[in-house]
Length: 209
Image (cartoon, rainbow, N blue to C red):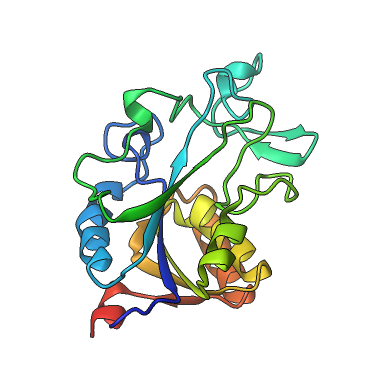
Protein backbone atom coordinates (compact mmCIF):
# COMPACT_ATOMS: atom_id res chain seq x y z
CA UNK A 1 0.00 0.00 0.00
CA UNK A 2 1.12 3.51 -0.77
CA UNK A 3 -0.91 5.81 1.44
CA UNK A 4 -1.35 9.27 0.01
CA UNK A 5 -1.59 12.83 1.24
CA UNK A 6 -5.32 12.45 1.88
CA UNK A 7 -4.92 9.36 4.11
CA UNK A 8 -4.53 9.54 7.89
CA UNK A 9 -3.71 6.71 10.31
CA UNK A 10 -5.32 7.32 13.71
CA UNK A 11 -3.96 5.19 16.55
CA UNK A 12 -6.42 4.95 19.42
CA UNK A 13 -5.43 4.79 23.10
CA UNK A 14 -2.41 2.46 23.03
CA UNK A 15 -1.66 3.33 26.64
CA UNK A 16 -0.21 1.38 29.53
CA UNK A 17 -3.46 1.02 31.44
CA UNK A 18 -5.04 -0.73 28.44
CA UNK A 19 -2.06 -3.03 27.92
CA UNK A 20 -0.79 -6.05 29.87
CA UNK A 21 -0.59 -5.30 33.59
CA UNK A 22 -2.66 -2.14 33.27
CA UNK A 23 -5.68 -1.12 35.30
CA UNK A 24 -8.04 -1.87 32.40
CA UNK A 25 -6.00 -4.31 30.35
CA UNK A 26 -7.48 -5.33 27.01
CA UNK A 27 -6.71 -8.97 26.19
CA UNK A 28 -3.93 -9.21 23.62
CA UNK A 29 -3.30 -5.48 23.58
CA UNK A 30 0.49 -5.79 23.54
CA UNK A 31 0.29 -7.86 20.37
CA UNK A 32 -0.87 -4.91 18.28
CA UNK A 33 2.07 -2.63 19.05
CA UNK A 34 4.49 -4.11 16.47
CA UNK A 35 1.66 -4.28 13.93
CA UNK A 36 0.92 -0.59 14.41
CA UNK A 37 4.61 0.31 14.22
CA UNK A 38 4.80 -1.47 10.86
CA UNK A 39 1.64 0.24 9.63
CA UNK A 40 3.17 3.63 10.36
CA UNK A 41 5.80 3.01 7.73
CA UNK A 42 3.04 3.01 5.07
CA UNK A 43 1.45 6.29 6.15
CA UNK A 44 2.96 9.75 5.72
CA UNK A 45 0.46 11.13 8.24
CA UNK A 46 -0.43 9.65 11.62
CA UNK A 47 -1.99 10.78 14.89
CA UNK A 48 -2.66 9.42 18.36
CA UNK A 49 -5.49 9.61 20.85
CA UNK A 50 -4.88 9.51 24.58
CA UNK A 51 -7.41 8.86 27.34
CA UNK A 52 -6.73 11.60 29.89
CA UNK A 53 -9.01 11.41 32.93
CA UNK A 54 -9.00 13.45 36.13
CA UNK A 55 -8.64 11.25 39.21
CA UNK A 56 -12.34 11.59 40.14
CA UNK A 57 -13.79 11.06 36.69
CA UNK A 58 -17.48 10.12 36.62
CA UNK A 59 -16.81 7.04 34.47
CA UNK A 60 -14.84 5.48 37.33
CA UNK A 61 -16.77 3.08 39.55
CA UNK A 62 -14.85 4.55 42.47
CA UNK A 63 -16.68 7.86 41.94
CA UNK A 64 -20.05 6.23 42.73
CA UNK A 65 -21.03 4.68 46.05
CA UNK A 66 -21.96 1.00 45.97
CA UNK A 67 -21.11 0.64 42.28
CA UNK A 68 -18.66 -1.86 40.83
CA UNK A 69 -16.55 -1.77 37.66
CA UNK A 70 -18.37 -2.87 34.50
CA UNK A 71 -21.81 -2.03 35.88
CA UNK A 72 -23.89 0.43 33.89
CA UNK A 73 -25.51 3.56 35.28
CA UNK A 74 -27.45 6.44 33.77
CA UNK A 75 -25.74 9.81 33.55
CA UNK A 76 -27.27 12.97 32.04
CA UNK A 77 -25.98 12.02 28.59
CA UNK A 78 -27.18 8.40 28.75
CA UNK A 79 -25.96 4.96 29.78
CA UNK A 80 -22.40 4.82 31.09
CA UNK A 81 -20.31 1.73 31.73
CA UNK A 82 -18.31 2.17 34.91
CA UNK A 83 -14.62 1.38 34.69
CA UNK A 84 -11.74 0.75 37.05
CA UNK A 85 -9.71 3.92 37.58
CA UNK A 86 -7.50 4.21 34.50
CA UNK A 87 -5.45 6.64 32.41
CA UNK A 88 -5.40 9.24 35.16
CA UNK A 89 -3.77 12.47 34.03
CA UNK A 90 -0.02 12.43 34.57
CA UNK A 91 0.09 8.80 35.71
CA UNK A 92 2.27 6.05 34.30
CA UNK A 93 -0.88 4.25 33.22
CA UNK A 94 -1.85 7.15 30.97
CA UNK A 95 1.47 7.06 29.11
CA UNK A 96 1.73 5.46 25.70
CA UNK A 97 3.11 1.93 25.59
CA UNK A 98 6.89 2.24 25.67
CA UNK A 99 7.32 0.17 22.50
CA UNK A 100 4.87 2.26 20.49
CA UNK A 101 6.67 4.49 18.01
CA UNK A 102 5.12 7.88 18.75
CA UNK A 103 7.74 9.88 16.84
CA UNK A 104 5.86 10.09 13.52
CA UNK A 105 2.64 11.36 15.14
CA UNK A 106 1.65 14.81 13.91
CA UNK A 107 -1.17 15.17 16.45
CA UNK A 108 -2.17 13.90 19.89
CA UNK A 109 -5.86 14.24 20.80
CA UNK A 110 -6.55 13.95 24.52
CA UNK A 111 -10.06 12.92 25.47
CA UNK A 112 -12.08 12.23 28.59
CA UNK A 113 -10.55 15.14 30.49
CA UNK A 114 -13.92 16.63 31.47
CA UNK A 115 -14.89 15.14 34.84
CA UNK A 116 -18.60 14.84 34.14
CA UNK A 117 -18.49 13.06 30.78
CA UNK A 118 -16.68 10.13 29.26
CA UNK A 119 -15.26 10.20 25.75
CA UNK A 120 -14.92 7.04 23.70
CA UNK A 121 -14.85 8.62 20.26
CA UNK A 122 -11.87 10.58 18.99
CA UNK A 123 -14.36 13.02 17.46
CA UNK A 124 -17.14 13.57 20.01
CA UNK A 125 -17.57 13.04 23.71
CA UNK A 126 -20.26 10.66 24.91
CA UNK A 127 -22.98 13.30 24.82
CA UNK A 128 -22.56 13.14 21.01
CA UNK A 129 -22.44 16.95 20.95
CA UNK A 130 -19.11 18.09 22.41
CA UNK A 131 -16.40 17.96 19.73
CA UNK A 132 -12.75 17.19 20.32
CA UNK A 133 -11.72 19.34 17.37
CA UNK A 134 -10.34 16.39 15.42
CA UNK A 135 -12.83 16.61 12.55
CA UNK A 136 -11.97 20.25 11.90
CA UNK A 137 -8.26 19.51 12.01
CA UNK A 138 -8.57 16.66 9.53
CA UNK A 139 -10.73 18.68 7.15
CA UNK A 140 -8.42 21.68 7.28
CA UNK A 141 -5.48 19.43 6.48
CA UNK A 142 -7.37 17.93 3.54
CA UNK A 143 -7.61 14.35 4.80
CA UNK A 144 -10.43 12.26 3.36
CA UNK A 145 -9.68 8.66 4.37
CA UNK A 146 -9.18 7.69 8.01
CA UNK A 147 -7.58 4.38 9.00
CA UNK A 148 -8.15 3.27 12.59
CA UNK A 149 -6.06 0.99 14.82
CA UNK A 150 -5.77 0.60 18.57
CA UNK A 151 -7.86 0.00 21.67
CA UNK A 152 -10.47 -1.07 22.15
CA UNK A 153 -12.33 -2.31 19.06
CA UNK A 154 -15.71 -2.38 20.79
CA UNK A 155 -15.50 1.02 22.46
CA UNK A 156 -13.14 3.78 21.38
CA UNK A 157 -12.35 2.36 17.94
CA UNK A 158 -16.00 1.63 17.20
CA UNK A 159 -17.30 5.04 18.22
CA UNK A 160 -14.45 6.80 16.44
CA UNK A 161 -15.32 4.91 13.26
CA UNK A 162 -19.01 5.78 13.51
CA UNK A 163 -18.37 9.45 14.19
CA UNK A 164 -15.76 9.72 11.45
CA UNK A 165 -18.36 8.43 9.00
CA UNK A 166 -20.92 10.94 10.29
CA UNK A 167 -18.34 13.66 9.69
CA UNK A 168 -18.09 12.56 6.08
CA UNK A 169 -14.75 10.75 6.09
CA UNK A 170 -14.12 7.41 4.45
CA UNK A 171 -13.14 4.99 7.20
CA UNK A 172 -11.17 1.75 7.33
CA UNK A 173 -10.73 -0.23 10.56
CA UNK A 174 -7.61 -2.40 10.59
CA UNK A 175 -9.01 -5.23 12.68
CA UNK A 176 -5.85 -7.16 13.54
CA UNK A 177 -4.26 -3.89 14.70
CA UNK A 178 -7.05 -3.58 17.29
CA UNK A 179 -8.12 -5.62 20.30
CA UNK A 180 -11.45 -5.73 22.14
CA UNK A 181 -12.65 -5.84 25.74
CA UNK A 182 -15.73 -7.81 24.63
CA UNK A 183 -18.23 -7.22 27.42
CA UNK A 184 -21.26 -9.46 26.93
CA UNK A 185 -21.02 -9.55 23.15
CA UNK A 186 -19.80 -5.98 22.66
CA UNK A 187 -17.28 -7.02 20.00
CA UNK A 188 -19.93 -8.58 17.76
CA UNK A 189 -22.12 -5.51 18.21
CA UNK A 190 -19.19 -3.29 17.34
CA UNK A 191 -18.42 -5.14 14.12
CA UNK A 192 -22.06 -4.78 13.08
CA UNK A 193 -22.16 -1.10 13.99
CA UNK A 194 -18.91 -0.36 12.14
CA UNK A 195 -20.20 -2.07 9.00
CA UNK A 196 -23.62 -0.40 9.28
CA UNK A 197 -21.91 2.98 9.47
CA UNK A 198 -20.30 2.31 6.11
CA UNK A 199 -16.77 1.72 7.33
CA UNK A 200 -14.59 -1.01 5.85
CA UNK A 201 -12.91 -3.67 8.00
CA UNK A 202 -9.58 -5.02 6.73
CA UNK A 203 -6.40 -6.62 8.05
CA UNK A 204 -2.91 -5.17 8.04
CA UNK A 205 -1.89 -7.74 5.43
CA UNK A 206 -4.60 -6.40 3.11
CA UNK A 207 -2.88 -3.02 3.21
CA UNK A 208 0.66 -4.29 2.83
CA UNK A 209 -0.11 -6.70 -0.03
